[in-house]
Image (cartoon, rainbow, N blue to C red):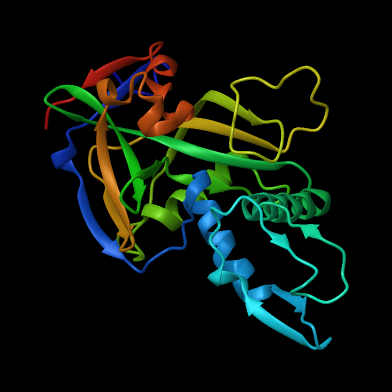
Length: 268
C-alpha cells in the first residue's frame, strides 16, 4: 500500500462501507441558488418593509409586501386613487430584492473585507470508482463541506473547524482526524453575484470572495454525524464531470482538478 504522505500525487481511497454515518442536531445552511435566495429575501423584506400609500382623504394605509407577487414587473399608481401625487411607476419587485441583497453584502464587505471560504474534497470509493461526498440542501442544491472563514483565520484550521461542525461526531470518543492536503483549486467572485471564476479578472482590483478547495485524506475508518436537515451524498466522478447544470461550475470541474492524482483503491 502506498501512503498518502509519501507522495502528494497519490490518494488512498477507501470503500464507502468502511465509514459509519449518523445524525446530529440541525445546522443552518442556506441555499445559495439565485431563486431560493430571492425567495428568502422576499420573506425577510415582507417582515421588515411596509409600503405606504396616500388615499383621497389624505389618510395613510399600509399593506404587507408579502401579498405582492414578485413576478410583477411594474405597476402604476394613478392620481385619481391616491390624491394629488404625480403618477409614479415603481421599480420591479425583483430589482428591489436584488438591490437589497447587494446592499447587505456591500455592508459586510466594507466591514470585514473580502470573504474567504474553504471547502473539502472528501473521496470514497464504490466498485473501485471514486466518489465525492457532497452535502445536499433541500432536494436540489449540493455543496462541498466547508464554509466561510472568520477574519484572519488560518485556512487549514478554519477548514478543520468547518468540517467538525458539519460532519464530526459530538463525542470525545470519536475525535475528528482531518488530514488536509493540498489546495487543488481557487475560485474568485469578482462582484456581488453568484457567478465565480477560476481566475480573478485583471480589471478587478477588489474581488468580493476567494474560495479554495482542498483535498482531505480520509483514514480507513471514520465516523460521520450529519445534521438532520442535510443529506450526505456519495456522487461518482463521472456524474460530476461536465454537469454544470446540476452541480454548478465549481463542483462539476472537480474531476479535471483531480486528474493529476493517482487513486489507490484500497480494499477493505
